[in-house]
Length: 133
Figure 1 (cartoon, one colour):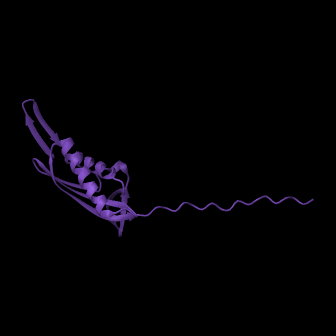
Figure 2 (cartoon, rainbow, N blue to C red):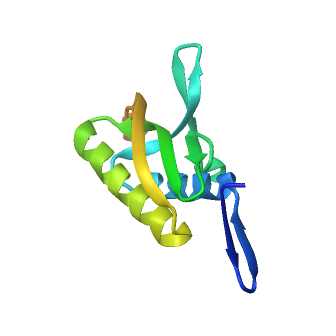
Figure 3 (cartoon, rainbow, N blue to C red):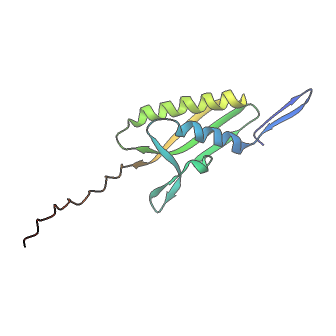
């Protein structure tokens, strides 16, 4: 379990997976992030959908602190340092706001670049030829 707090009414436990999901969702909210990466498979970063928000996230949680590693894929043409800073700020605010944990570091690992797919070209439409009788 990640964070455990005891009060007069009982205890509160926050699982590591919950912190990971919060971090993954906060990271994918940032413009320029194409998705989270499940790691390198054969030299190609595998992009994961929104269903696997805790994938591509490594969380280390102590009693009152958390450190997060995010493995992301960025969209081509976006300024990577700016995207990384925005991710760090958003993840820190989300985790601290929802769990009360102090986030000591958010490390962003860019594992790939997503290139936009060109729109499929439509074949030129043929104009019907008039029939000759």
